[in-house]
Image 1 (cartoon, rainbow, N blue to C red):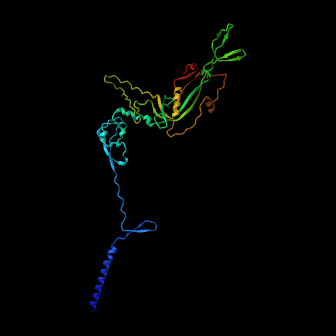
Image 2: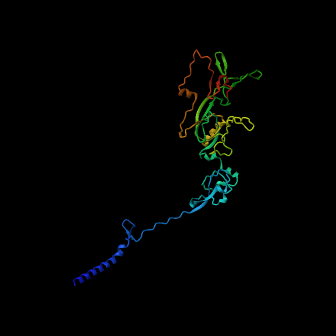
Image 3: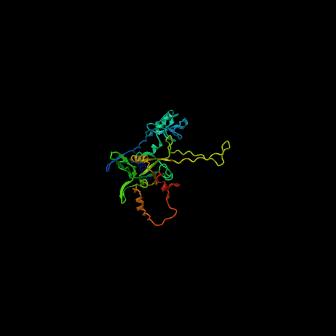
Length: 375
């Protein structure tokens, strides 16, 4: 009897445990709700997580691009171009989308590989290429104008000046005294005349010089030579941009174009007839230079050229952008600045007499007897 009662109690406990498990198991396996914060103190319960935004696909358009470098004036063949995808928002307004619109056209300017071909980069006729302009205008800064002046090996730093350099312009001028009315070099020629009793005027021979009174009586003091000009040298224009040294090509294109090499014959080389080939002539040095300067300085250079003012170029360092004022150099400046004294007269001298000195230009001299003949 006792065993039967114990068995009944165990069965009842098993049934109760099964009921409890059946009721609580679904609640334990359900995901917990997520809390979404919408403010500093408010909490809103949400059953699910917020979905991520969907990315918008990039829209592409096919345009014509170059698959090789196309030099200026080159007629474009079919195998030099292709269609390539390009972001629609970045496509230039004048981009070409049809290959047939480019094949057979002429490159108006240099077109590089993988560069989009635009409608203003190709032309149908070679004459339209001239509308591009010169390389000089393309590299000239917007606030400068170009003007050409003559040069030689002395005024161009022994031809060290090259395209793209910066130079200072030094000018030298000779000053002489002139008659304010005649604007001619003094002294004036004095012509004496007499008036006869009959009223006739007799002119005497003109004598240059000035009248003076001495112990011997009135006299005309004449100069022993022409008036000696007074030299002054000063730096005028600073930081002039060297656009080009020498003459420009006829088409105006000189940027990035290597110079044509001059063939040098091999020693002992002969032509077809057995005659030795003559030596290759040395190409002449440039005698003109083009500078980029402000408009007012261009007028100064033009005036200096018209007035035949000697111009010397001073090459600046590539890193120097300073503008330092300078003092005009005259004979007095040299005497005072470098403490030069005038030699005193002595009762002796050396033999032979020193009557000339060498100039900066080799092979020429300044001689007293040639002073009046010198330009």
